[in-house]
Length: 637
Image 1 (spheres, rainbow, N blue to C red):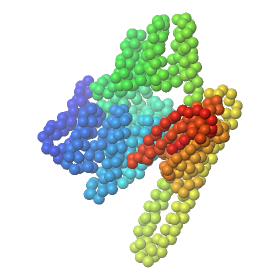
Image 2: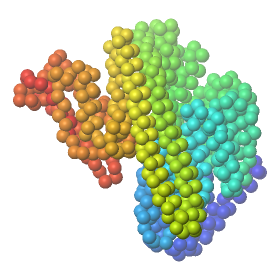
Image 3: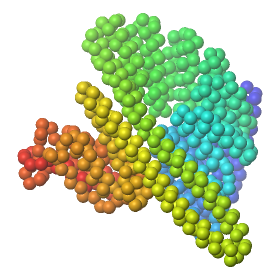
Image 4: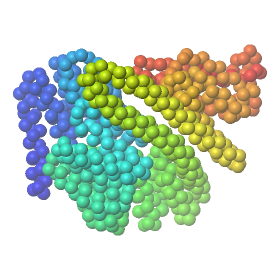
């Protein structure tokens, strides 16, 4: 206890000193610097205070004309909101920071270039983390790779190490454990070279997670967790301590050391309460509730802690914790034989679970409800309703697994393609460095250097042509692989009798073909990095008409201006339009319904794509009902 008090005093002392100094300063650069230090000192102990200091830093920096410091404050605000799980605000400040650093990089003003590029790279790293938390892994990889490349301009390793740490977790999600471990070790060595204690502790924690959560080597993981814990105590990071305590609890629980797991989960909750972090409190108390259940704690104690989790979950808007605790309380009453109360809490869990779409949980919950209503409460209507809900959730789990398999195949193709491109780019960078030093030496030889430079230029042009050919070949192969996948889905659909399952498979086939068309346009077009959307949408529309057998009865009218989009934008946009047109074709022309004479449509859907300065797209859909004869018309604008 005395140790904890001494740490708290050690942590608050620098902050108190900075706050005292801040109150004595006039508006100027020194005050901006002190605010920047307060932002970082408060980050691990008081997020709201850190947020206030960052806002003050941005405002004062703009007032005194220090735009670089203002951009750095925006970057810090993005990170603070991300830690607080305020994702919309985090993305907002990420984009503001990137825009600010981009404008500064194009100005001739004499800024600290290393600091500018470090902040610019860090902003892209924050955006990559945002996409990672949204489970959009391709975008997360893209922005972290961009952050790594940009950090080399600053000559500082910290941003690169942070991005490598996140990429390691992405490799874990892809079950590439060796690569994830290799990357975490690289992160550890980088922070050791920098002497960054907080970074070293995070690397130890990451290595421990890989060993325990994925490789089932929890005893080995404990060594790394304890190293991380020691450093967190040295630097006075309460938030970091809470996260490590949480991992220590998981490791001891897997090792069946429930008393130790209980201690670490209680410490997680205690630290979270001191920090006022509701989501971290929910995490700690939820884990503690599970351990107490396994320890056979009294029912009254289990009910109290689960009610606490429910209350905290409401305050933190954490639905998963709420319906999990409602289910746990229902289980307690079911064990006691109080089936009416059990059914009541099961019902509250079902309501929240349905909102979240957690079909694995709903499948288990609805079967328990069915059993209670049928065997104990003899309520046939509710038993039937619970059984129907169980069957729906069970089917949803099965269908989700099928489409996840299709999605995984597509992801593997995309990942393989990107790895080839990255390898080519790395090789090109290596060759470029070699040529630079070679040319520098040859230029010293005067006339000989001129002839050699001309020769090297011709070789470079030839290699660029070869690279263009290889990139086109990659797109061609990805398109062919997606076509094979589409054909397999088509063959499978011929053996499916159930109409709902057949529709699901056909929709999956249409989505795969929509992605395949993108790659076909890339390898057949003149621009390797952009898709001409007008021609693509024509082909997509023809494919969908043929898929539904409506090409004799329905026309698609296109009113599109020339528009080129990169593949990261074209693929999701193509999938969105695929869904919109598919829904129109499925539901707009029932029972051979046709449009009015004169070519007016039975249902006209107008899709407007307007290019906005920030690169976003706005969609607007209008539908008008009609009747009469003539051909159906699907209008795309």
